[in-house]
Image (cartoon, rainbow, N blue to C red; front, side, top):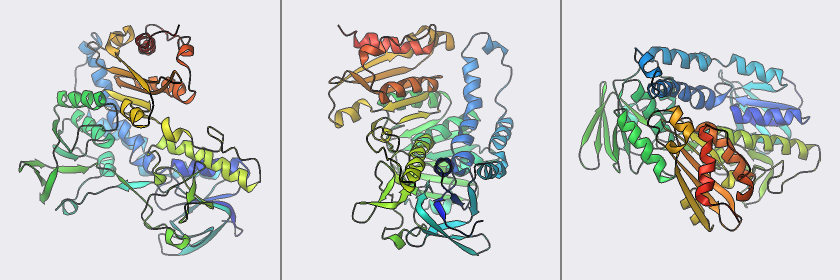
Length: 478
């Protein structure tokens, strides 16, 4: 480890921190990255990668069962242990040697331990053995420590040894009964995975599923979960939770009780900012960090701190790995540009800003059916003051969907800004729609006029033909 200061110090070596560091190194800076757990972070070991691995096998089996010919060839049920074994391979048995090696090959110095700010451009790292190292930054410090699961204040919950997403995605055996608190992305995906494994799943949510998406998304996913055998208690809340040995008892607000072997809490996330030393630079510990579009942290006076950046989930702009990596590319590039006194392109959609965070965020929920969306929902667009027109189409009526699955069920929605005649939101719900999303993202980010979209001809027979049907529903400009 060099004795001289680094141009940039990054705290948090998940995919976001890795990308900040890599872009800064490519820009000509020296970089140290600090990590207290595994290089690769939450996404690699406890979130995106293991969760999608757990979901894939069940989704693939059901996809085959929906196609005559393939259906008849299936003679067995899901091999749960094989699924868990594959998950273990995907996460490299929670060994980060490969990702640590990549940091070295990229010219990034890895410092293992807990990093915290100690005043301006200074970071103290406490190693596992208690020894400390002080790092100084010539130009900037970037915070990329992500989030942790929120444990709601429900009597008895903390003593019931609840699972969070970490335990759900790393379990080496499957419980017979699983209760899930929360109907968001984590709750819906894990309900799908564990119901596929044969677990008796009960989902308890104060509202419907996948709130924040178009209403039909949550409704279609709820129908599919019920078909898998899941018990959905929507519009309900737990009042008390007790564990007695291997049994967890959840008492709902109407007095009904539910018993399970494990309880998964999936009710939201909190920022990992409590132990970051924010108070040494005049910021409150434990809060989300507000940033400008170049990811500089807002100080106590509301003005950006010129040397401090917060990138990824920690800034609460878009709690998605791919969106955090998008921010990271902008942040790493702008840190290098400012350090080397090169031009900064901070205009909307410029090279050094995260403009897409505002109204062009893509997201896929890998339930069965999948939910893929980008931009604004119809309700969000109305709330934002847009004059809109909404077009819906049943994806199952597209020839490609009919070939994909017998009895294909799914819905597409396009939200159009009537003043600009451009698409500002798209949602697809159905089997295999995730790969449709990037076309929608390009349309939204590029602000492609409707009359030009008519010339983007979808191939036949593919599910992407739904684009033509949406445009026909809108009507061709004269």
